Length: 84
Image (cartoon, rainbow, N blue to C red; front, side):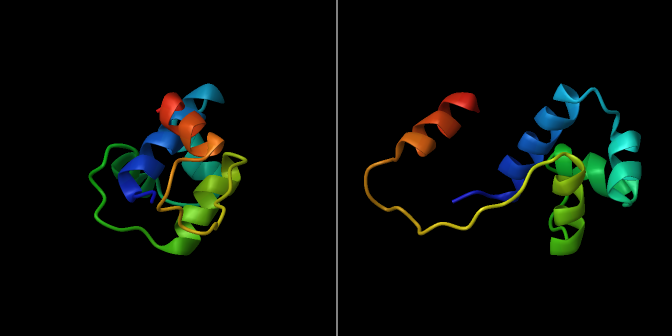
């Protein structure tokens, strides 16, 4: 299961891949920079869903809902683990 720390790290990675500053990401997502920095640095205890969706959308990322797999990891699971 993904947590906010993992999401923050993925957001930081993608932002850097796109060559954006935190302020540029905040501007694109129409959120305050004070929401981006703590999210990326694991200092944000919680974030609203709408804010998270705006940030992900600005980075051309999305969330997917799947059935929880409590068995052997899937190929996607192994790829995601490798990329971390």
